Amino acid sequence: MTSLRLEGRARVFGDDINTDYIITSRRKRESLDQQVLRQYVFEELDPTFAASIQPDDIIVAGKNFGCGSAMEVAVTALLGAGIRAVIARSFSRTYYRNAINNGLLPIMCETCGIGEGDRIVIESTGSEGALTVRNLGSGEIISAEPLPQIMLDIFSAGGLVPYIRQYGDFRI
Image 1: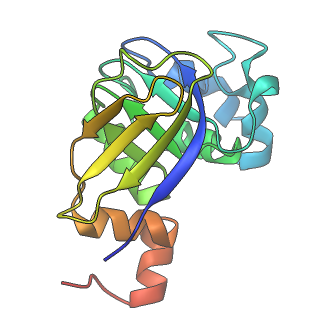
Image 2: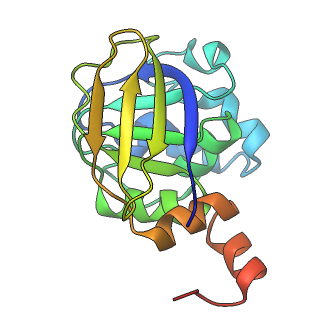
C-alpha cells in the first residue's frame, strides 16, 4: 500500500479553469519541453504567476478544473513548474485522467476554506485510498474523495509509463 504525504503552499484559482488558462495552446507549438513550458503557466490569468512559483506549490481551485481541450501539455506544464498536486472541487474527466497518467495528483474536496499562500498537507490515511487535506494555518482537516490504490501507485511511480516500466503490467 502506497503512503502519501505532500506539503506545499496553496496557489488559489476559481471555477472553470480551462486548459488554455493553464497553458495557452499556442505555447505547445513552440515546445513540449517541461522546462520551457513552466515559464508560461497561467500566463493568460496572471503574466507574473510563473515567476512566483515555488517548489512544491499546490494548485487549489473550485469546480471543473481542466475543462476545455484534452491537451496533455496542460499537465506537463504544471509538472515542469514543480507542482505535484491540484486540489479542486471537481475536475474535467479528461484532465483528471491525464493528471494521473502523467504523475500529477488530482485531489477532489471542498476548497473554499483554503486561501492563497496557506500551507497545506495532503496525506493518505491508510485505509482504502482515503485522503485528507490539512490547512496548517487554520487547522482545518478536509476529507478528500478517496483514490483507488492503483491510482496512488501510478502517481507514486511518476505516471503510467514509469509504472508499467517498473511492474510490466497492472498489479491486481
